[in-house]
Amino acid sequence: KEAIKDYEESSKATENIGGGGGKRGLAQQFMRIEAALEKKLTQLKQHVQSIKGDYTAAKESLLSAKTAKTEQIEKKEKIVERLQELDVKEKNVENTQLLTQLKSLVALNEMLKRQEGGFKERCIAQRKELEEKLKQLKSGENDDQTRRMLEIERLYDSDLSKYNKLRGLLAKKNLQIARVTRSIDSIPTRAELLQYQRRFVELYELVSGKLVETRKYFELYNMLEEKHRYMVNEVELLNSISKSVPKLMSSASGQADLGKNFNSIIQGMRTSEDQVNKRCELEKNKCGVLSDRHKKMLMKQRKYFQAVKEFQEECHKNERLQAAVDAHEEEETDDGEGVPEEDAE
Image 1 (spheres, helix red, strand yellow):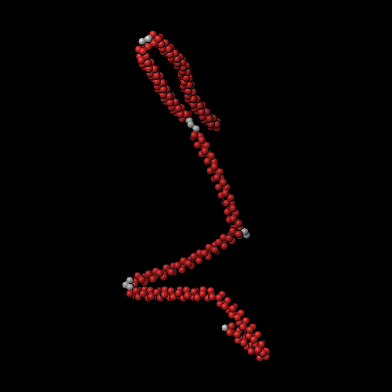
Image 2 (cartoon, helix red, strand yellow):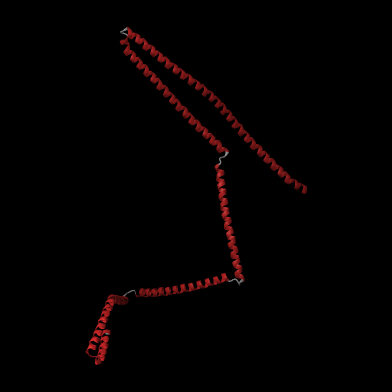
């Protein structure tokens, strides 16, 4: 429409101009009008291209809206049909009393929901009002009663903080007392120490007896091993003698060699005997030294047991004397308290 209006205006202008300008002026004017129209047409095409997307989107939204409207209409029709069916069933139902009661209960439920909403609104309003009153009371510095209440609350808070601090200190002190009590309980008494001593002595005696038994077994094994070695050497010596004597006795040089061999064998046996005798003497000396040490240790043990027995007797004696002293002091205090009464009488 805008292009048609522009064309009509331009044609009217050309007619007005053409009345006195001639053909040349008309041609120029026509060319200008044509260029303007082409420019306008290009602009219109661009505008059409720009609004084409909006037009397509609007068209699609219109189609979707129509579809949604159709669906809503169909749902509405279904709901109306369902309501009509329910009305028909309601008329034909046998338990009309129950249906009426159900309707009244539904109405009562709706009424209670409305009352609940109203009650909540009233509660919120009352809460706001009470909060405002509380703020006014807290900020009411000109009211004597309010100032007195604030002072009481301040004193209560300070006393409560002091109470909490004292509770913390008491808890720390209780922990220290419990720690000290545990450390005291961990210290054994005299009876426990004596029991521990007896148990350690029994354990020492058991271990010592086991050690002595083990040493005896080792010594017996070493002795039997050495005896076995000597017997094996003796058997080998006798076998070699029994094999070599018949051969060596057949000649004089063999007899001389046999005598030398016997002499060397006898010398070796004497050397072994001397070594065994030396070892025996060393073992006898060690046994004597250990026997002396054992006698000394037994003597020390007797003295120790005698000292422990005397110490226990002295401890019991000290306890008896301490009890007697305490009883005597109590009697003296009782006598001292009774003297003023007699003087008063």
